[in-house]
Length: 411
Image (cartoon, rainbow, N blue to C red; front, top):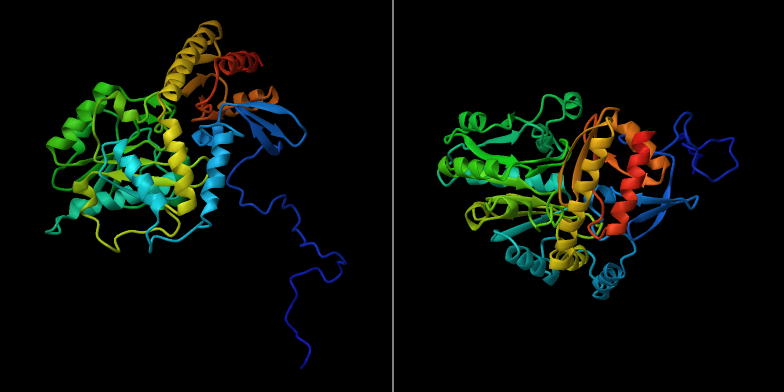
């Protein structure tokens, strides 16, 4: 055989077996996030520790994912039990008990009759959009297809959900966006004018708008919205990806308004840090979906579903929800005191353990100041600092947070 003339991708002058890096390329990860220099290596309770041993009080919780905090022994046991059967993945071509048990538990804990499992919040919303359009098509093929989203909402960054997300900087690079999805004002008159019973399939709403500045929608508004959608035969989709699963002090945020949606999406804390999302739907909506209409390879796998069943039981516990409500009151009182004492705080909004603090400086500056002090917070817009601690946070933890946050405000 002759000598190959195929060019080599390695450096011919290098004597190292390491893969070479290109100049000015500090990471092989796609640069869609600005990350601080700290590298986190472990966690305990509501604290994280970096590679240098520095501790941080975590009021981000993996963006509302790590509801049970870090190093939870019962969660670790649930992971171990989930491995006992040796089934990690089977695909949705076959039945497995964990997914069916989890679906049964979610139905028992909600308005829903059926559940579709997927891998993330954005994927759950994409599934909800398809479900709404399939329902809107009906038996006769009537084209009820439009989906309306509210100003300030965030529903994901996949192609369909991006069209329903009110963040210009996220949308602009990817125009033209998916058609048939519109953003309307957070106003009942505008809603009433926009909902066409002939063409509108659904309205999607976050009961608490997370990325949009932690804006709690008034229960009276939510009830009126439910009435309008029912009158016009339009589905109501509630996006509880961030505000559900106990975050507001009720297991579902819609409980505060005493309404029942047609579809609900959830995700973040479902499986204790493993990727999981779900679409919950009434029988009327779910029955419109036919075999082949939708699918996912990994959704509801036996390992993830087993862990998720444990998390569901934990986060529904009355004592945990009572702690969320109590710590929410503590946070509210403390943040209002800081607002009264510091002109740098313009407004405070929230419920349970989901809070937004409007500040005069850029939010990223506050996030950086806090991190230097050993406190992790995140942003929800240019001037809003968002607080999403683990739901196990204690009275002492909240008191410590208020001290560190005030220090960060003072600069």
